[in-house]
Length: 219
Image (cartoon, rainbow, N blue to C red; front, side, top):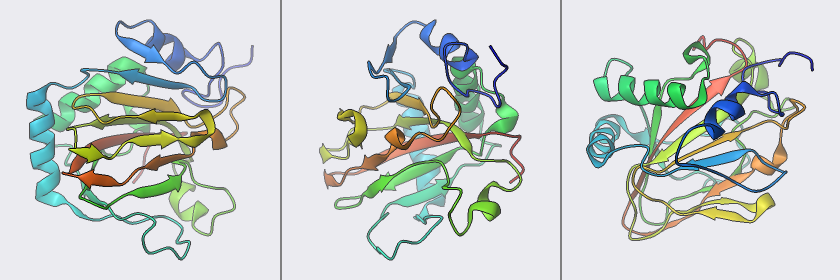
C-alpha cells in the first residue's frame, strides 16, 4: 500500500487509527462513513477547571472563515490558549500521545464557550478548496486533517454535538474527548464530518479543540 500523503490520512494502514484503537477506554463509532472516536475521562475535573479558567481569561466573540450571510451561524466565544501554560502543555502532550500525530502539525489549542442560546450551525472543520479564503488559511500549512475536541463541563441542558450524516449525537460530559478524521480513507475531504454544536438551553458549555494540518503549522 502506498505511503500516506499526510499524517492520519485514513485507511487500514493509518498509523493514527491503529494507535488510537489499541489504547484502553476508546470507543469507535460503528460507521463506514466517518472515522470517529470517543474517550471518556480523558481530562480530570481539575484539568477541566483549569482550562475553563484559562478560556475565561482570553475569550472573545467567535468568527468563521467564510461568511455565509448568517449572523447567527456561530454565536459562541473563542479563546486562544497560550502554549506557555502548563495545563495547555500537558493536554497537548496527552492528545499527541493518544493519536501519535506530529505536534509540529498542530494548531494552537483553542477554547470555546457557549452561553444559553449560543450554537455553531452545521459546518466542517476543513476548509473548502473553493472557498474565498482557502489560500489565506491553507496556503502554508495545508488543510486540516484531524480534530480533537474535549468537553470541559456538562451544561444543564443542550449543547450536544450532532453529526447528521451518521445520525450521531454526542452529549457533553466533563473530560470526554471526541476525535475524528476530516478525510476519507483515500485522503479526500469527508463531507460526513459535517457537525453542529447544538444550542445550549440552560447553563453554559466549555470545550477545547485541537486541529492538525497536512504540513507543519506556521501560524
